[in-house]
Image (tube, rainbow, N blue to C red; front, side, top):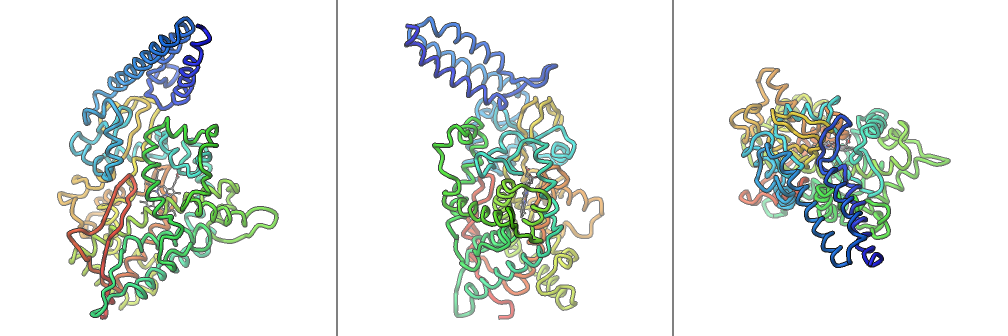
Length: 551
Ligand code: HEM
């Protein structure tokens, strides 16, 4: 009897160990000894009960009792989670299960569901038993602030591109993160990097040349082009040129090399969904289960990027290292280890290509579908060229002195923010946000589409693309609006986007270099693109006709 009961008991014990490993993800309550998961008492009672009862029961009864206890335990934890956040408004199911949040994530409209939750339930809305979403810019700035009590929760571990190693984006350890940032910041900011602007100029020229040679329509030739794809080739070439010292060559090949775009588009949403399932994330990243997982550098798409990153990094370390004054060279000079450099180079590609591509595509879409804006921007560019204030190619400094261009860039980021993942923060103490009590251990996601369309900050017509709102206003008003839009780069926080300077240079140059040469017409304004939001935007089929301006 005793021996027969053992396997069931061992199974349950294995489950307990797993549950125990996940304890940090359970709702917590605070005592004088610090935060303790609220379910710990239930959990230990359950452990004790099964320890006492299992050896005495026949196997079938033991299995039944075990299952019954498990169901009871799960029910009790659900009730517990519901009770601790029942005062927070939100969709009814969000109080009991993660299904509302998972459905939103898989619907292709994640960021809009978060915005709708804020519109319906207020600036703090519950979206899962242990998750709320905040749509208030001021409170988010405080939460993300340099010296705030909030930190990154386990969700960020989904950004481990190598399942067994952290990088700047995935680490949840504040001290490790701070040290890594110190080594990365000079290079990202262009310090000790000789050719940052030239490398970007070369890729802008590549984009112009691709449109000019293959996709220029005339009165007699019709050559539609999916601008969404070409812009992504451009951002991938910019980032790879910065990361590896040489672009991967997307623009020259005019195709999705090694199916990188196709595979990241299918895996990134999946990765971000797993972020909401810490138990699964733990399993996938468990070194004990490594034998079940494919080698990451053999995976189509991302594997090639990883291999290229490893090759580029290998040259910079060892007995006879290649010393260069580029971004990777700066990372090495600032003390990044070989292993860290391998990870950070891959992060750069993933963090820096989709985001900038979304910003460029969506802003271009808003420009070409708003005749007044289109005309005014082209007029500013033309006058700047005539007056000798715009070189060829335009410099970053010249672009910063074009008020209408700067207004268009900000308005584009505001209307269609590229960074729309949940990016949650967590505190180990109870907190009050927007006047609502947030129990310790609750993940607080952000909702850019809520705070960037705020009528209080941007006016009654906040839903309209109107760059003019940035012009001729009080400096105080401008500062408040700018601070809110720059939150899209997590500006002023300890997680501020490391690639902000690079992204801004890209935006400053691309619109001018395209619109000084070309006119663009959307082929089907009733169906401008395919855009799917799974926390990152996946966009394609932005079909336009490009013509030469003097034709
Ligand atoms: C319009 C374009 C971009 C937007 C809106 C954007 C937005 C953001 C945001 C919101 C974060 C903070 C994430 C968090 O910790 O929760 C972030 C982090 C980061 N971004 Fe960007 N990003 C953009 C472009 C880029 C580019 C071009 C690069 C690379 C050259 C880049 C590299 C990074 C890196 C490495 C981090 C991690 C920083 C850290 O953990 O300390 N980003 N970005």
